[in-house]
Length: 76
Image (tube, rainbow, N blue to C red; front, side, top):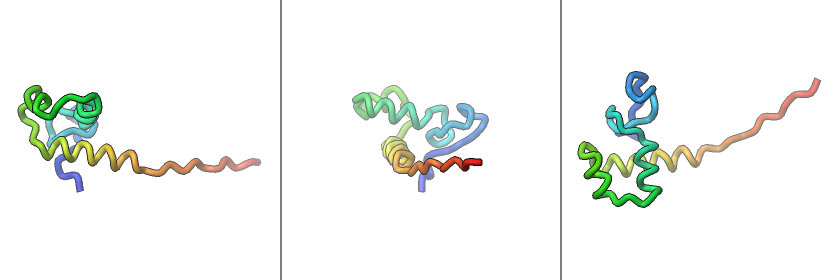
């Protein structure tokens, strides 16, 4: 589903990164969210490809769609 999102304990402490590089997904999402144009992102990170940004955003959207169900505490 996210073939460009990788996890490696030896790279960025196991955080979600782009294709095994030291470019965390969170960085890409943050840059886009703060209005940095894609051409500027590519200028700063020339190893990135358009699909990397696309998958980073899709991954973030997928994470945000997760449901959290609070558990009921048992009373004694």
